[in-house]
Length: 330
Ligand SMILES: NC(=O)c1ccc[n+]([C@@H]2O[C@H](COP(=O)([O-])OP(=O)(O)OC[C@H]3O[C@@H](n4cnc5c(N)ncnc54)[C@H](OP(=O)(O)O)[C@@H]3O)[C@@H](O)[C@H]2O)c1
Image 1 (tube, rainbow, N blue to C red):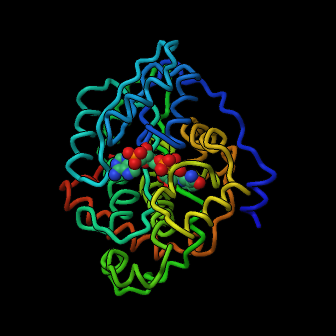
Image 2 (image 1 turned 45 degrees about the horizontal axis):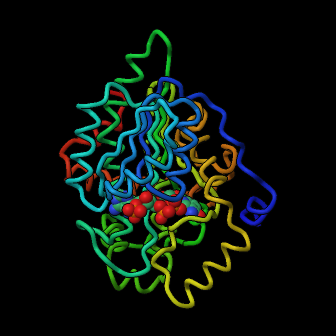
């Protein structure tokens, strides 16, 4: 009911925050919500914008489209494949070595896979939407903390926004009954995936919210100088359901025709979230940056949250030893 009310009766506020002098990174910004968010950020005065994309050709085409020949913003296209841990590490190393600051980071790249595939050591959706997203966060946090520290004279609080989704309510997370230490193994299992058709994408978005909350608990504001939040743009037109075929595609197209927001309108939530203040640290925001009541699975799910964080952090530390040390006040 809340979802339909929001789709029909609420319109995210048109972004007006200033990005003047700021450096902004948006992953998956060659199309969809990421590209529209990029367009807003340039309109709002960003000094430098990094389009982090897996296809440089698509990224260059998006840059031309966004710049429109008139902007003075420095728009750069950088390669990033979230299905590869190596690519994530190379991208983050470039951020840390080549950029003097990172004020706003939108982890927008995401997939909704319709077939079981693996990438690295997980089911593909989990690698792209969850593990690589939080690996990226851990790896770029030093640059974002440095940005906050350098701005002591004119205080700035960098923001990292994870694009989550209201779809997180479309799963009861049946894998949560897995034995201790076996949550990720169960989530990644092909037979388990087949038992819960269509639930992997919602689950990936649920895990994102749990992890944002877990990190904010470890790194409470105001001691922690970076705001980390999760955002839901509502159901929007984009290429997200591109893998759907046949009846699935007909059903999705019809559903979207009836209730979806335009891509531009959806992108407003993403821009408002990444321009938001400290009050959104650890929060899930919707529409014009409102903080809704969370479902009981999350609101009462502290134990589950701790289990997820423990397993995901162990995986991140196995990829880059000690990287989750960046999720601390040190
Ligand atoms: N549309 C909605 O209704 C909706 C609702 C709630 C949340 N969201 C979230 O919003 C975000 C953007 O989705 P969208 O709707 O704009 O979908 P989209 O049009 O399909 O855009 C997704 C973007 O992610 C990129 N991407 C996918 N896999 C990648 C990888 N391995 N490495 C790097 N980039 C990758 C895509 O690049 P390519 O073009 O090269 O594939 C594309 O740029 C996602 O996180 C999605 O979950 C969307």
